[in-house]
Amino acid sequence: MTDGPDDHEVAAAVAEEAGRALVAVRAERADLEGHELKDLGDETAHELIVRLLASLRPDDAVLSEEGADDPRRLAAHRVWIVDPLDGTREFSERPRDDWAVHVALWEDGRLVAGAVGIPARGVVHRMDRPAPLPERPTGEDGAPSPVRLAVSRSRPPAFVVALAERLGAELVPMGSAGVKAMAVLDGTVDAYVHAGGQYEWDSAAPVAVALGHGLAPTRVDGSPLEYNRESPWLPDLVIARPEVAGAVREALDALDLPA
Image 1: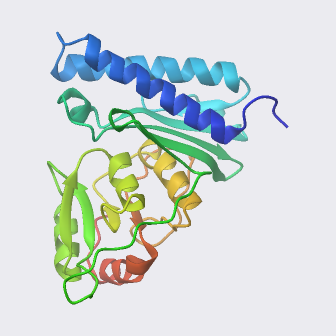
Image 2: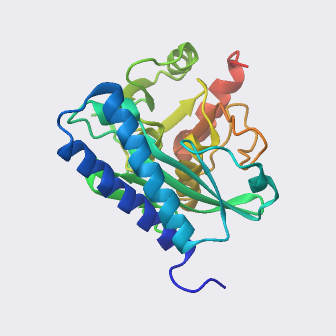
């Protein structure tokens, strides 16, 4: 048993600390914008997260979007999968708040801890602190409102547009993957479906938090999401509320899904 904070506390504390550093970068470096601000945010958060994990969990491996991939992680029993700054574009566009920090722990084949921080909103979503999903909105007649799908604000993939048409759904544009996934939990949307290309660090923490809230994330073909593989490429994801999960699954099965 590890002394000190448990893994859930570590995930949340690291996400929160990195988030504070990113907020400070944004505030203190008003002279930077675009790629320069993105790069500084990525570097600052990555270095801080790696340093904190080395101190708090020195025996664990780390897979970070911003770090060199160490193949020794494939033989490790515990691997932290992190995205130091999810949504660099949104981060660079002050005062947007739809960017995130992802910190997840994979242990012996499954996600066991995770936190998604949304620093500009002062929020950290945790795997171990589930909250009831807000009620879905209803129309004037009391019938459920159309399904709301989170989608990229700048480049919604064509298949999601086709999915929305099949479901009679509304598209709700927003920024980073973590923000989209957490929007399912906070009631802003009913589902997040992505097939435009992602890596393990894009989804590990959001999936961990969703699992903690009783949801059942999958790939778009319904197969399980697997982490700490030799290639971190994990291009697609489905996170949906229980009330709409069946309808989303049926609609996906009826579409020609991207390879």
